Length: 77
Image 1 (tube, one colour):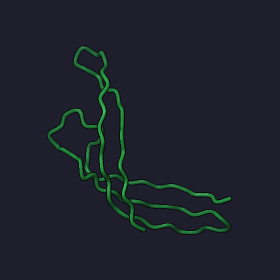
Image 2: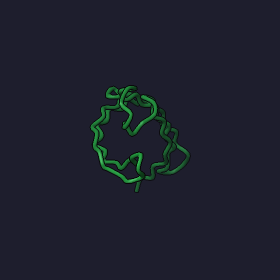
Image 3: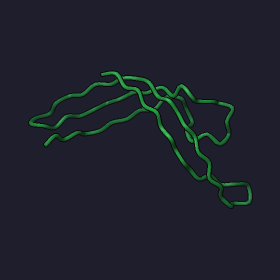
């Protein structure tokens, strides 16, 4: 399956004096994955996404890499 996601993330980071500040960032992810049914209405999902908004020069970025890996389980009712 294909995947497109827009994420708004508000996060906290530590300063040199150990105090904290908040920042926010909007990111666009594209990628794809596989879904494997495991019985009934249950499926396992593996997804690989690439962050199009990633900036390796941004020291305060919430992600260390433009690649994001996800795994999950879905249950239908």
